[in-house]
Length: 562
Image (cartoon, rainbow, N blue to C red):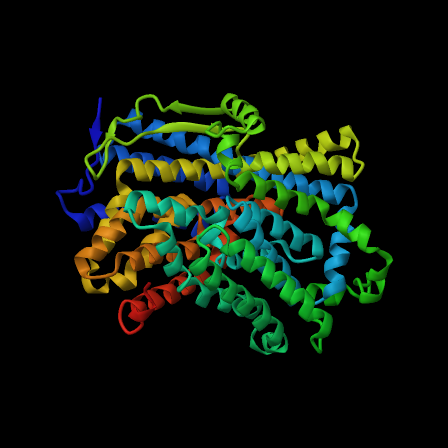
């Protein structure tokens, strides 16, 4: 039995309906920031509130609401939860095998300065992982690395979330941009060009902003040369690659250029003072910190060997995202290569696309067409499986026993049980919000801003990423609405679509999924409220910058539109 979405369920009044649609979102903020609930409890109760609003106010049949939640919960487990488990597992393997001590030493051999370590690991290396994998792996790995180097866990998680702002729009080999082409009809290359004329401003600023958050103005100026090398090398490469190569490679290329540029620069330049956190300075009398002289005990081969798990992770994830490998692993290969054909058959056996009972094609959306709903499970094609393979190879590289390998995996599973429960519930909440029409109601309200729409267009992307946890999902959710509204108010549609994606990157750091992933990676499960309070103000500030950039590009800077 079909049900048609109603976007103005309260007396056909859009404003009142929007206030109703905001209830679950406001409740979630209240639960974490004011009530300070544990993340998984906030996730479960937010889901219940969303279900109540969907059924009692939006008139969604209870069965359909529950099934949409189940669809989201499954997606929360795979691929998102699977990536987190395997990422943390791989990191724990490097710690237990002793390899992480060498990784730590290799970073310290470049610099003992915490400011520069944040630029190398959180900004550059995190962006590389975002470009190759996305879906939480960048924050999980880079935050865990910073904690291993000696960063305060909350600081490490917060810094990595903020640093992740720069690469999100082109994450997972450009999927957020590519995904928008289908529903909007605007070429991905054109959207890539426009995003590449917005985000580089933010990317050049983020390294300075990170260090300002960590240390304030005075200590930031001490490392300004390194900040400029890191930020501008990334931003320039991001502009060039997005405008002349397309959406697939900007993150990977920008991150590599930034990482190597800063590493080479640090061979010739050092800050006058070494910055460490206050807690480290007070502990120095008891336990001396690593010094540059102590780093010479490891050979280049030992350092390469220690970093090999993360090099393997990068290699496997990159391969998993390439054509024609990616469709082959999901059982969608159509070529004639015998080897790929064989892998394709395995991919088919391990890929499941099951219609969600009582939901598939039983909801009529805003375009008057039924909405497809599947439980989509790709066991071989999931990025988490690529990370697991990297972990399996690492077992042999690190000479780890089968017993230690198994116990480390079980340990990671136990530690991540509650964070993954939170992730599954908040993704379920996102799916209920979408299926009931609440997300569209909020989008329609912002679209009423008329001539000010260019300023508010990024807010739609920010809201979409907060709700869904994904720039890809936010682009799919609001891409068509952005295009239609832009045409109505005389705005270039490609600018509106770029604004959706660019605004979305600033919402990633407050997305419940991202918060849960970051806390899980650094051992702060249950303290998600603290991390949200840390990132919220930065999210709003960076969103404001994107709003201003978009508004100016619609007016005095319209020459920047391709």
